[in-house]
Length: 212
Image (cartoon, rainbow, N blue to C red):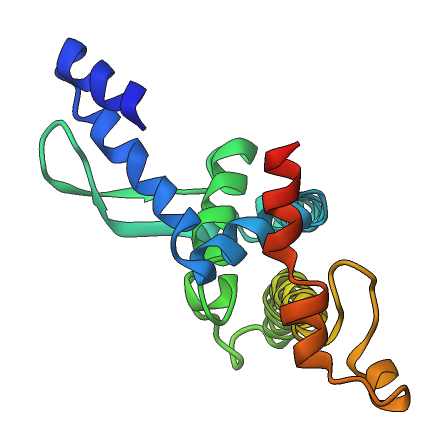
């Protein structure tokens, strides 16, 4: 942290003031668990994300060949002139893929919430095709893969909670020096608290090692 502050005074870049805020995670246990859970399951999370991108990529080709005309919007802002223009977001396969990643994955109901609705009376078969397309995208991407990603995070928090509970239980019920448990002390008629605070007081061993 000191090095970052020195770099700030040397370079006058505010970026070096933002970075030390990350170290707050070492002070707040909840934030530390968040970073630790991401680190523990980083590979699994990346695998789920890559598989999600693959599924969206397959849907993109269906969209590009059969439903590109539904991805034309008339309220697109042109940055240079500031005017709203009509633009197709499936003009190319790359543009279609990026649009579906950006809008489809982030929408609560999937890509069906973003693109235009189709008429049932004018073309029943295309309506049924669109219905199956929207439902399949919603089930696979939003429900299944989205909940798998969240499940990884929730399971990691559960593992960390169990790990912290086990550590706390060891601190309170197991002697650090001889590994004698509180239950074993009860069977031997030994006062566990006196045992860890007098006979095997941990700081006495620390003082002894310091003396040596």
